[in-house]
Amino acid sequence: MAVGVIRTSLLCIALMSLSSLFAQKEEGKVDAQFLYNYYEQDGNNSPVTGGIGTEELNFHGPSIVINVAIDSSKSFHFDGGVDVYSSASTDNIDFNVSSASSKDARTHLRVGMSHFNGKKEQTISYHGSFSIESDYTSFGFGGNYSKGWFNYNTVLNVNAQIYLDDCRWGRLSGEDQLILIYPQELRGFDWEDQYLRQTYSLSVGLTQLVSKRFSLSVFVNPTVQNGLLATTFHRVFFANDLQHRVERLPYNRFKIPIGLRANYFLGNRIVLRGFYRYYSDNWDISAHSIELETPIKITPFFSIYPFYRYHTQTAAAYFRPFQQHLSNQEFYTSDYDLSAFTSQKFGLGINLYPVKGIWMFNKKKSGLKAFEIRSGIFKRSNGLDAFYVATVFSFGNL
Image 1 (cartoon, rainbow, N blue to C red):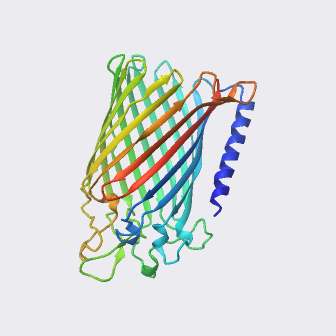
Image 2 (cartoon, rainbow, N blue to C red):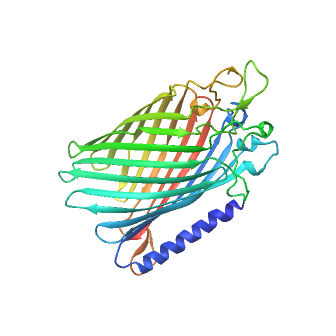
Image 3 (cartoon, helix red, strand yellow):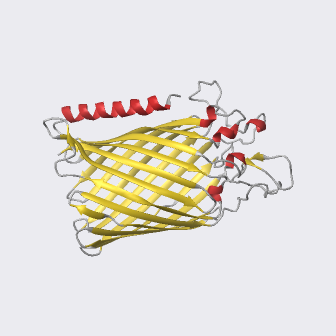
């Protein structure tokens, strides 16, 4: 796959689309964002090879987000992109170095509508989504209800999502038969008889403006998953059996994160943002996350924001490292995402948003309005290290 061609083509199409929209749209406001994310990681606990081996991965994710105001109460939303990655870990699904499994791409898009009622202080929106990769296809549906009181001093937000996934390989390759992917040496036997997965998620949040400087938010986000939750090309090696197998996990999972967010305006130039989340699920994982972010306004139109996140979690009941499972267990995985670990993420973000924009490309004063870049380093206690850069180019009319 021509990875560079995909990224370049998407960028050209995005810029041409933006120019066309801003030139033709007179009755409604058009806002758009072009996003480009880069992520790389390395480690030595790949689940593809049973909890040992390289986790090296490189990821590129260009995408575009467009909002068009149809009138004062309705707006149309679209976003889409292509995520491209190369992975030394998944290259070990088979025994051919730099094989087709070492690279993959995911195409995704979402379209929706939003209805705003200023008198009632409420917004209702709904959307549909679709994404496809070599080994899965997903359809999504969702809706959001936002209600404010007392000039938005209190805001209730309810968001519901449904994702319906098919985890079989073959749609992008033109194969006549769709199949689950197993490690090369374990093929020829049907390790799994399920290939569908359903995810149902509900998020309820309440935000309260406590004072002119202080706001507080609480949320709960229960999620239920059913179907194939294991990854069929993950290997598991046993302490009492020379024959290894495909990862096996329960067909249901219930997750419940509960969070608290607080913002405090410390003078005109500094904002203190704090976030805490507790997580628990029926696989026996419990976790705590704390995040701190401090935007600092250098000038009225330029700000920086250092951030730090700390996370700790217990292991799932079904996790064991390489060759520490017993073959008589019902469920087993050596995926270190389900292990006990602590992690830290820290970095810096930069915002640039001049009143007159950064670059206007027509007489109607439309073009690049703002730019944001965020970069961070991620370190996990089991040796996984990662680095990422996220950029946002905001286009629109002044």
